Image (tube, rainbow, N blue to C red; front, side):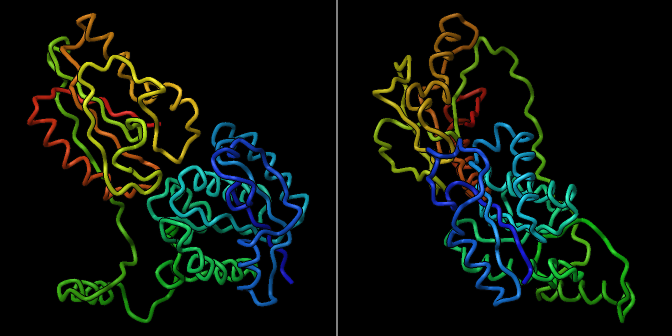
Length: 346
């Protein structure tokens, strides 16, 4: 029986959500359901012998310390393979999974594997560990386990994985020599013919895709400019009147701040579910700095603050949705004569 260690965050460990994201690394006394799902998928060939968890905020805020502590815990249980996640589209969780998998592979020399959504920032580690693409939420857990388990077993057995497009993991950027029945010219022509015919095909060497945005010219005179505030930090009027989702937002809000000098605890809050909301709820200006902008307005350092702000939640929100939101409200900003926009995050 192959011994496999599993790394998860505080949520999947069952100890709590964002309110427990500060907890440090720990070995669980009881194997949780998500780890048992992997063991069941291996049908007696391997099992999760230990589950290590760590709070997402703890890892993100003190990464080096967390990595050292997690690696020590993994060494202490003596696993032959490490699985992290799956993290789906949770950014901090994906960041932790990618980091842990890469560090354990480099330091201990054992195979590692994780799973996450293709837009998760943790996919930056795909050239340092095997990453299996998943859905963007835990609703895809069953499919994620089904995709990750066989690859993990192959790695644990020391078997070499085939090409990413055959095995179902993300492109790693690592190229290996191999023999094909047909020369590259023939394979390339076949792919081209399929592309021209609108038929599905998989390239053997995907080219990088960069989203380049040309910067606008500098504002000529900021002291006369109308400046708007926008945020992905989820700041909304108290009660979240438009019901913006705490994760994977499907829409944004537009709110009038004409005459508003300060975002008070009684009038504004955050709808965001990806960070500790306590400080933002105490003073929403920490995320959307209306108070500072009013000071700049009084001092004549900007012309004026635009009367509307636009807001959504970036937590788990697809890039395609974010682009759609921006395309819609940027037209309104231009039409309203806004000269500059300050976009805040969390």
